[in-house]
Length: 341
Length: 245
Image 1 (spheres, chains in turn green, blue):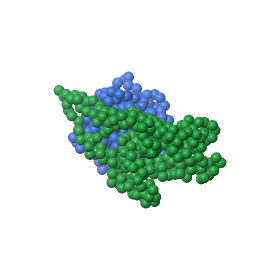
Image 2 (spheres, helix red, strand yellow):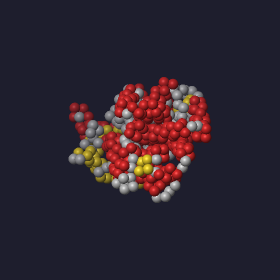
Image 3 (cartoon, one colour):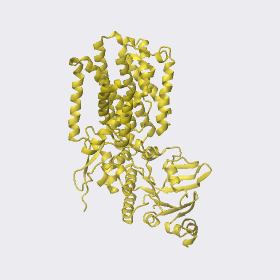
Image 4 (cartoon, chains in turn red, orange):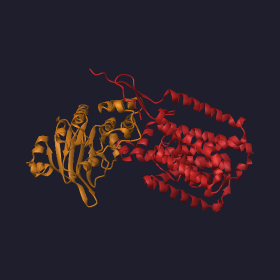
């Protein structure tokens, strides 16, 4: 008589339990930092959190859902625009910032019905066109004065230190909340369906996946994340200039961070954002050569290490700190192939 | 076949055209809930198109598809798979960046409506039935043809289907691999699934099916007892060529 194999589905490893604990401790330490740290550090870390949000959003969209957007600056810019509009209408500055991100998300819902009719390269370019169209529409608002732009003056009502700390906490909460939301989403059955769509949309539909609904959820989530990053950027810079806030460089940064860190891995974009932040901090003043250097790095990664730094680490050491996948472990004979991915 | 068995899947007057090219020409097709039906015919006869129209992957130009008596003509493939009607692909279409287990898990949750341990158990069962447990943790892009074919079948099984449409699942397999496949399909029959199977390897097909349909140029030219159909001079002429007689 054959002995029937018994299996357990493993979703956490010892390494992931440890790293989950470390992540909680790091967040707790970061949360109290403004009470002890210098203004400069708080300001710089706020920028880092914005980068992490952007990288994680682009990775959720392209790395997991297969929606390669070159127009995420649309939501980065329009979130800031709506925040200024709310502020001018009398809403206090911080509620106005959050309202700006939420209104941009609300705008993303009807847009998704049109944009998600496009596939592959059409979607990528379509998103860029959409971003330019929104940019031009915002320029038509007399408040913005075309490319001259405007400022969210109400933010100046706060003392400099208070504003720095508030921005920091808002960015930290946004980053932790969004990373947590993506993590929970990817570990759910919905996350598996989204990845199936990325790999083969028609095959996913043939086994019950509601393709358009899943894509819409990811599109709207990424729009919210990018809009939140956009209002955080406005909170730190105070000024709003359409050319800057709707600049395609934001999406270029997102692509670079996700690609270098590890597209389609949860940890990769966080690593990519930290590296990008360090490089930006050192070399941003070098101008055109710096941009050309970033482009070269992105191309080299796309060609020779398409799974990015974290992808290579995963492959070499089979290390998954915050796993979203499933591992079938035998609890009785016979054993499955452990050669893994 | 029992007298109580009812038609679980019906296609009535199905037509499908791509521009000026008519691929299905007024095809009637019925499958009873306790039946395994084979479909044979030369390349370009419209076999895959018929299965794709029945599964909802393509919308027919004319005609009606009924599943369990309900008109599902306007219902898409995702919804039909949730109702219990699923099709495998002629050329395997794995989710290449996911493991074999994760591929099957998508089917168990999205179409099977399962979650948690129930979904895990259904996946293990489907993988086991298809002899795939030893590669459960391998990314699908690293699997060979045999395992990709098995994965198509395992994914379909994990949807908890009542009707499985198989499109050349045996193509390209060795004799030994085919024996395993036939055993798996027999097990599916024992579990109460109705099957429609397109296959060019007729001797394999005849080990499983009770009824055979022959299609030529988008039409059904014979339908009945497999041996009788294969002996029908019209089938011999159209499918095997006049030199075969």
